[in-house]
Amino acid sequence: MRMKMAFTFGAQGFILLAIAASFLLVGEARTIVVGGSEGWRFGFNYTDWALKTSPFYLNDKLVFKYAPPSDTSVAPNVYLLPNLLSYLACNFSSAKLLANETQGSGEGFEFVLNRWRPAYFASTAEDGSHCREGQMKFFAIPLPHPS
Image (cartoon, rainbow, N blue to C red; front, side, top):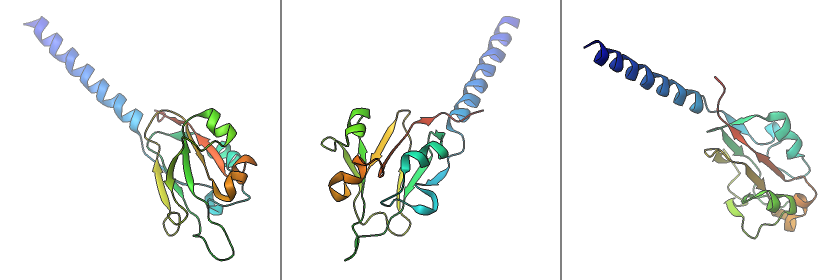
Protein backbone atom coordinates (compact mmCIF):
# COMPACT_ATOMS: atom_id res chain seq x y z
CA MET A 1 0.00 0.00 0.00
CA ARG A 2 2.80 2.46 0.87
CA MET A 3 4.53 1.83 -2.43
CA LYS A 4 1.33 2.58 -4.33
CA MET A 5 0.79 5.85 -2.38
CA ALA A 6 4.40 6.91 -2.90
CA PHE A 7 4.05 6.33 -6.64
CA THR A 8 0.77 8.26 -6.73
CA PHE A 9 2.25 11.25 -4.87
CA GLY A 10 5.40 11.08 -7.00
CA ALA A 11 3.34 10.99 -10.20
CA GLN A 12 1.19 13.91 -9.02
CA GLY A 13 4.32 15.92 -8.19
CA PHE A 14 5.75 15.22 -11.63
CA ILE A 15 2.52 16.31 -13.31
CA LEU A 16 2.45 19.55 -11.31
CA LEU A 17 6.10 20.20 -12.19
CA ALA A 18 5.38 19.62 -15.90
CA ILE A 19 2.40 22.00 -15.79
CA ALA A 20 4.47 24.68 -14.02
CA ALA A 21 7.26 24.32 -16.58
CA SER A 22 4.80 24.77 -19.44
CA PHE A 23 3.60 28.04 -17.91
CA LEU A 24 7.19 29.27 -17.71
CA LEU A 25 7.67 28.57 -21.39
CA VAL A 26 4.48 30.38 -22.41
CA GLY A 27 4.69 33.33 -20.02
CA GLU A 28 3.02 36.66 -20.61
CA ALA A 29 3.07 37.68 -24.26
CA ARG A 30 3.89 41.29 -25.08
CA THR A 31 2.59 43.48 -27.87
CA ILE A 32 5.49 45.36 -29.46
CA VAL A 33 5.08 48.08 -32.10
CA VAL A 34 7.94 47.63 -34.55
CA GLY A 35 10.02 50.81 -34.47
CA GLY A 36 8.13 52.13 -31.43
CA SER A 37 6.73 55.60 -32.11
CA GLU A 38 8.54 55.68 -35.48
CA GLY A 39 6.54 52.75 -36.84
CA TRP A 40 7.66 50.83 -39.95
CA ARG A 41 9.03 53.49 -42.28
CA PHE A 42 11.95 54.38 -44.54
CA GLY A 43 15.07 55.90 -43.02
CA PHE A 44 14.92 54.15 -39.64
CA ASN A 45 17.45 51.56 -38.47
CA TYR A 46 15.37 48.54 -37.41
CA THR A 47 18.40 46.36 -36.74
CA ASP A 48 19.47 48.83 -34.07
CA TRP A 49 15.88 49.04 -32.78
CA ALA A 50 15.65 45.23 -32.52
CA LEU A 51 18.92 45.04 -30.59
CA LYS A 52 17.68 47.68 -28.13
CA THR A 53 14.21 46.08 -27.84
CA SER A 54 15.37 42.47 -27.44
CA PRO A 55 15.01 39.94 -26.03
CA PHE A 56 11.88 38.84 -27.82
CA TYR A 57 9.89 35.98 -26.32
CA LEU A 58 7.69 33.22 -27.67
CA ASN A 59 4.16 34.47 -28.38
CA ASP A 60 5.18 38.14 -28.38
CA LYS A 61 3.11 40.01 -30.94
CA LEU A 62 4.93 42.35 -33.34
CA VAL A 63 2.76 45.12 -34.79
CA PHE A 64 3.86 46.74 -38.04
CA LYS A 65 2.27 50.19 -38.42
CA TYR A 66 2.77 52.29 -41.54
CA ALA A 67 0.93 54.79 -43.70
CA PRO A 68 -0.74 53.53 -46.88
CA PRO A 69 0.64 54.65 -50.24
CA SER A 70 -0.16 58.16 -51.40
CA ASP A 71 0.58 60.41 -54.37
CA THR A 72 3.71 61.65 -52.61
CA SER A 73 5.03 58.53 -50.84
CA VAL A 74 5.62 54.85 -51.35
CA ALA A 75 4.36 52.58 -48.60
CA PRO A 76 6.44 49.69 -47.31
CA ASN A 77 5.31 46.09 -47.02
CA VAL A 78 6.39 43.25 -44.73
CA TYR A 79 8.04 40.03 -45.88
CA LEU A 80 9.24 37.06 -43.86
CA LEU A 81 12.52 35.81 -45.32
CA PRO A 82 13.24 32.09 -45.06
CA ASN A 83 16.80 32.16 -43.70
CA LEU A 84 19.83 34.20 -42.75
CA LEU A 85 21.40 34.14 -46.23
CA SER A 86 18.22 35.54 -47.82
CA TYR A 87 18.09 38.17 -45.09
CA LEU A 88 21.70 39.25 -45.57
CA ALA A 89 21.36 39.44 -49.36
CA CYS A 90 17.82 40.89 -49.30
CA ASN A 91 16.82 38.02 -51.57
CA PHE A 92 13.02 37.86 -51.63
CA SER A 93 12.68 35.00 -54.14
CA SER A 94 11.54 32.52 -51.43
CA ALA A 95 10.15 35.10 -49.01
CA LYS A 96 6.54 35.15 -47.83
CA LEU A 97 4.49 38.34 -48.09
CA LEU A 98 3.01 38.96 -44.64
CA ALA A 99 1.46 42.38 -45.20
CA ASN A 100 1.00 44.40 -48.38
CA GLU A 101 1.31 48.19 -48.72
CA THR A 102 -2.11 48.92 -47.21
CA GLN A 103 -2.28 46.42 -44.33
CA GLY A 104 -0.12 48.47 -41.97
CA SER A 105 -2.54 51.38 -41.67
CA GLY A 106 -4.87 51.88 -38.71
CA GLU A 107 -4.11 49.34 -36.00
CA GLY A 108 -1.36 47.83 -38.15
CA PHE A 109 -0.48 44.29 -39.12
CA GLU A 110 0.23 41.76 -36.34
CA PHE A 111 2.70 38.89 -36.42
CA VAL A 112 3.02 36.46 -33.50
CA LEU A 113 6.43 34.99 -32.74
CA ASN A 114 5.03 31.52 -32.10
CA ARG A 115 7.98 29.41 -33.23
CA TRP A 116 11.30 28.99 -31.50
CA ARG A 117 13.41 30.01 -34.49
CA PRO A 118 14.70 33.28 -35.98
CA ALA A 119 12.19 35.39 -37.88
CA TYR A 120 13.71 37.61 -40.58
CA PHE A 121 11.63 40.64 -41.66
CA ALA A 122 12.21 43.09 -44.51
CA SER A 123 10.45 45.31 -47.04
CA THR A 124 10.70 45.15 -50.84
CA ALA A 125 9.60 48.77 -51.27
CA GLU A 126 11.72 50.85 -53.65
CA ASP A 127 12.84 47.58 -55.29
CA GLY A 128 14.37 46.44 -52.00
CA SER A 129 16.91 49.28 -51.90
CA HIS A 130 16.06 50.17 -48.29
CA CYS A 131 16.62 46.55 -47.30
CA ARG A 132 19.97 46.46 -49.09
CA GLU A 133 20.94 49.70 -47.29
CA GLY A 134 20.20 47.93 -44.00
CA GLN A 135 17.27 50.16 -43.06
CA MET A 136 14.03 48.24 -43.66
CA LYS A 137 15.00 44.92 -42.12
CA PHE A 138 15.54 43.22 -38.77
CA PHE A 139 15.34 39.81 -37.21
CA ALA A 140 13.92 38.50 -33.95
CA ILE A 141 14.88 35.30 -32.17
CA PRO A 142 12.08 34.47 -29.72
CA LEU A 143 13.22 32.88 -26.48
CA PRO A 144 11.24 30.99 -23.83
CA HIS A 145 10.02 33.30 -21.09
CA PRO A 146 12.27 33.52 -18.03
CA SER A 147 11.01 32.10 -14.76
